[in-house]
Length: 231
Length: 381
Image 1: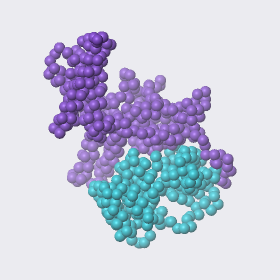
Image 2: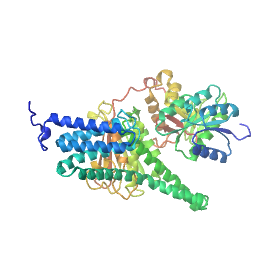
Image 3: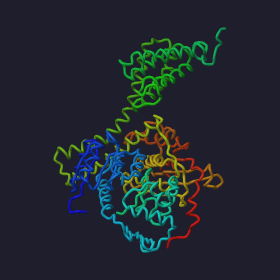
Image 4: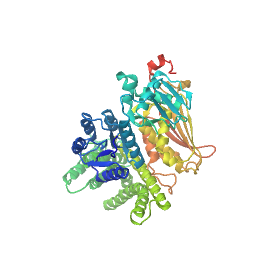
């Protein structure tokens, strides 16, 4: 990243929501551009080359899903979509279309800032080689030697469990849909077997979490997928 | 051929079923005609009144059974002809659900009132019905708006104190106010969520998204959703350790559990223990059998259930105690969600104090496991 503050494009038609988002981003040192329609959002993304896009899914002209598809034709800029509870299917569609993350309205400032930080950090470290190891709390994943330790004790994982853990951990902080996890770990023919993912998440939690019902590393996003917490 | 006396006319004037059905059909037809004619000048609530007049006429001319039938058909006709979208049984606007319920109630009351007051003047009757309709509707609206306004009032007061009365947000007072603002918004969101869900259920728009889920994860999500409400409250979990899958709608189950937990928090002393138990049981100890059931219990150490039939707790707009906040919708939603799953919900007092709510859902036959993982048990070092 350059020394300049990151540039955030906010695509939101509701003026009060847009004001809340801009004020908050501005107060935390981000530079803000605002678009009120989907078409305007696509145009401004081309003009301003933002570092991140906050995208409302329910826009008056073209919906957020279509905006995501149009942006993904030419840019990898992180997209965080904003949508109401109960519209989980829309969020999944946006994520599968290439959005990086989502937030459910209403949300708090902490949540929003955390998502922005995670998305910007992912871009910053997205080097072709990736990282040789991931450490969060007492959990250490050595990708080079395929070794997982918890509080310095070896954890024995099946190949699938290991593949699922590393898929999530490589995308730390970001939500991954069931479909995305299935494609990565089980291959393209298994994308409808969401219960494979749930069973493996339960097994991983049993091996990695202190209290599997109140997980710290592998977080569930109901109706959407899983998120590996790196904080 | 003369009409023979029919069972419809047991306690009314002795008329035949043919005449009764003719009166029902004619009065409904006439009301619909009037509603459609006056369409541009009246609103839907007036249409409901016109249908109620039709029910009244029917009740005056026919038997009790025929007037009950007429009352129910009037609700259907009102839905079909007078509420948007027209000429479908769908409804756009949630407040018509209240109107439907009130109309059915009022229609049935009319049937019985007319029966008793058959000899009194029609004008008298219309007044009584109008008052009763108004009272029922007012009671429901009052209940809903009270419970939405309470958090909103706190939010408005707190926000104006901060924005207009110079309370410094960074001062200890200011920080308390800001925390109140956050908590009350969360409460408002929870109650709006319940109301929205109830509307969906009643509007017939509830589609269950049945998938295989791990009970532990569903319980964990409900705890996560209520984390700020639960605070430091000790919640003990007794969940079968093996990830036995259950086939349910995750969002619905989370909502049921969140409402039961919310209830437990509200009606038991601070810092007293709440317990959640989850078991999957099958016939003759075969938990993966197709008839297996998933039993979920939420237990608290509060004062127990209010006196009376526990079943009434699951009806709309009743509340365990009237001095506590809450839309009184929570348990009604639980019941509706559980019914949608073909399950059962019940409440009982615990022998050693407190209340116990039990939800039982069909769990389904466990699906095929991930075959490849089973055949490659070779662990990663």
